[in-house]
Image 1 (cartoon, helix red, strand yellow):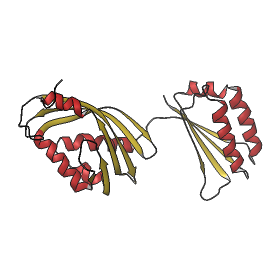
Image 2 (cartoon, rainbow, N blue to C red):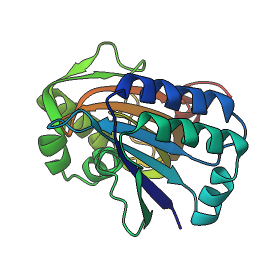
Image 3 (tube, rainbow, N blue to C red):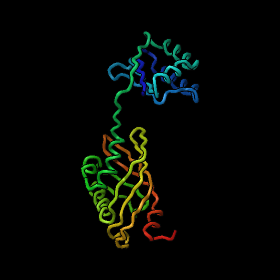
Image 4 (tube, one colour):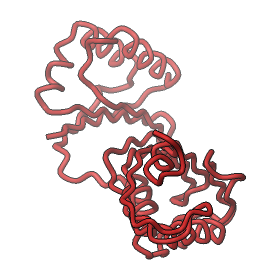
Length: 230
């Protein structure tokens, strides 16, 4: 079970405390078991500093605490604080990753004809970059039109394999599977089953997709349609 430790302290030397965290990251490279760390300063009181550290498990956190480098950095941190730091130890029981869910919806729901995700999650000035298209697709209406063109040509679904989120970006690896049911690039319906793999990276602002980048195997799709030689 994921384990999260919250460390709170009060200090008149926040810049030095931040430098100390940088030092800990450097000296524990290849040794630490922490997977994610964040440091925040209280907006109402900048002397109140909160560090949030995530570990794969409580046992991993204890191994991290046992590192000589961690012990040394902790003692230096205590010296920078006006009072002893406080610790809150949490077993993570729920973790909602909203941007990952938004990215998944943008792939899977429109494929089924449900355009509510486009209306809810695409920003008015959204820009979509796809090397298979002649130009960028701009705005929700253009996105809907593009999806509908594909839906007239294929009965298809997206199968999401994995997702990685960092900051306001989400990368989704997927497999696209469809039946060629209508005209596509001048080729009449063949009823062939087509499969292609790819990845999409979306950048979000305030919960809405502002920009998207597509990378997918268009060549494999063309070969399966008989539009290119094997």
